Length: 100
Image (cartoon, rainbow, N blue to C red; front, top):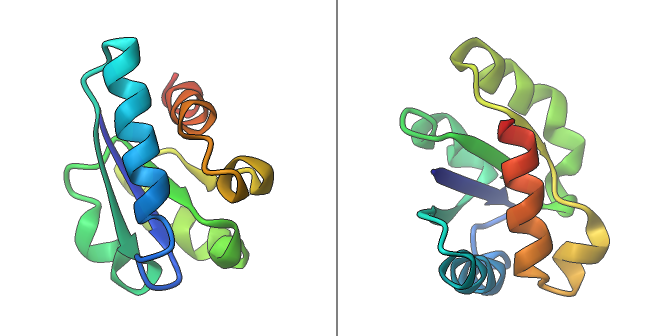
């Protein structure tokens, strides 16, 4: 599964991406996880299974849905607590729930 995270600049989520990759490995999940700036979201949706927004760009959820819905890509804002604590396991579970 390809999970793309989108935040203000693509930098703040890099630690979370690493934690999610560790969680996926621990759970035996085959997940490809990457982070990009929200401004580049439209360029990174073609092979995306789930799109997640960092809380700092959560106000863009409507815009994100306009890009993702026609492609059948579920999109939502990462819960602030999990984002702030870099809880990779919870965010990974959140992504898999969105995909179901």
